[in-house]
Image (cartoon, rainbow, N blue to C red; front, side, top):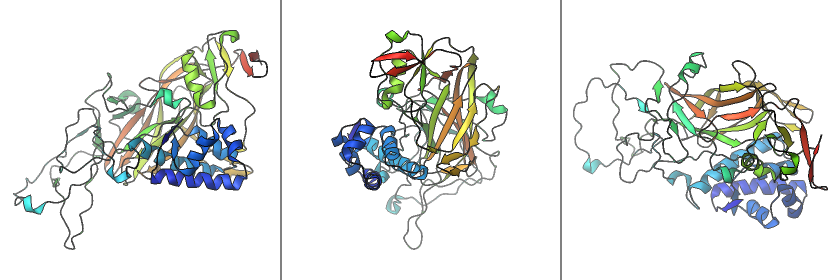
Length: 444
């Protein structure tokens, strides 16, 4: 699925795609078949006239054109920015995007109006900083009538992302960013749905916090920026609120390979598997559960040009029980491009799962494993491929992303549309593959 989008970001993405296609020597028809889209749709992608609503077809395009892992990462970044621009509206420049999201996000400093500015009065000697509450009813800050807040949309693309809308609810909660055992007791409070409304579990106590107690002598910052002697505008005032957005951009970063579902149905009652982008919607419609684990692709984007440090990702298990005694259905076999991205392995069977960096492979070359910290900004998102596995349990969990900027830090929760992620072990369960030539599922 695509949407028309004539934006500079879409054109930059299209330029990357045309370069890959030209190098591959393959025709639009051949590549369109591998993407499961029409030739005209692929033309629109490569001309910048459309941006797919999920990354899966772009990833398949890159693999079909022989893109390296670095090129796939670069294309993914371009797609995130193009998708963000598409969501803001056709032709809307990034700097002019507006939002009414009550997350305490970034607001450009208003233009100074000296003709209406009264003479400044004496300021109090001390004013403690106000806590930055990350709820859906955060109080508005004073602004000029023309000031508009920049909205950076979470880049989320899953298999069947259109049917699922935005799968990852984002929750801001107070945290130290240290990843200590206290994190388990703190949990997350204050869920905020993608549309900006508070969920039923939201708590107004969730907040970001400075890394130390506020000083009694901290000077109060003026809400009105001053102009320099040369007439240049003063730097943008410090950002408040949660400075990042985090969400799941794919439920299987190795799509269409390596995805299985557990279904409580006999093979004769199970329909054929759909196109890769619809795998997850297919599984959910049949009451299925991800089998053996999940390959989540977590994308974190800053809300402004200011860099934000990602200190850690934590896995918080909320339930662990005996695995489901259902049948396992494969979504596709025979994959393998010789390219394995650097990942973060997670053993969900451990009492306290940790996120461990694992090296990737590109042909004969090794892609080194890189752990935290990472940095993100509005123009430099970070993509993290998580390989979460279970061989002995039915596990439910959610993710927490620790961030820090300056003396502030906090935690963003990522879950499955307001619910925990879930996967169940498939070891020892009957496995079935679909045979198109015979139009039936057959036991392996």
